[in-house]
Image (cartoon, rainbow, N blue to C red):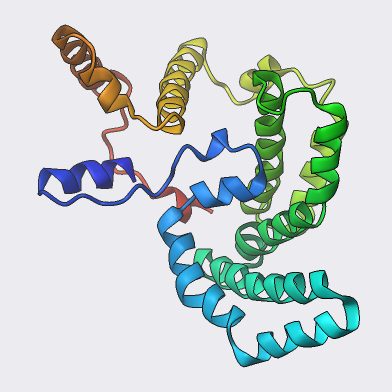
Amino acid sequence: MDIIIGASRLFGIKLPENFNAPFFSKNIQEFWQKWHITLGLWFKDYVMYPVQMSPLILNCGKFCKEKFGKKAGKKIPFYLSMSALWFLIGIWHGASAYYFIASGLVPFILITLMDIFKPIIEKFEKNYVQDINSPLYITVQRVCTFLSVSVCWFFVCSLSAKNSIAIVKHAVNSVLTCNIFNKFDLLNIAVYDIVIMLIGLSVLCFSDYLQNKGTSLTKFIDSQKPIVGYAVIYAEVLAIMIVGNVASSQFIYFRF
């Protein structure tokens, strides 16, 4: 998306941001608000809100309010309309079962559970967390969010629900015994490649950090001395020439 946005600006077209530092999100709901923003907004405007205001859902809300109370009268229609949104998002990402589960079913379940348990979480924070804005607590929230989202990717990469469940079980059971360096050896990844990977990840994390703060890597470089900007440009060109994949490569979605 950054390449598309940058190429469009060369022709005077300013496209909206589609990913707003999602991995800095503090909860699963915030993550999906920052992930694939244009797609989410389109489905909200043209699917979720019309379904939520449809006579069927409105009548369902009135029925739930009379039978189960005011809170249920609001929440149940909301969950029903949201299920339609995530059902279509799952189909949009791919008709195969694992793509549908990863892109539609699992996110819907996670967001619904978070909304249901939100009062309990707020009560826990009020009673046991001294400062909810402390760096430590925010880091814990981000790590938990990342681990929750990773469950979705398991379903995509494993190509079946059965394999993904087995991966989750293995990840939980081996979390304390896992040796990451042994994994690099098994994958035949050289030290040189690991260093390049870490440098690239550091740049990406710093860029997302700036974006999460309301600025960007471009603005940060422009605020420095001109020689810094020239150095970054030459470093990018050299990196592409030395370690870049200049051959034809398949789009990542088509590799599964």
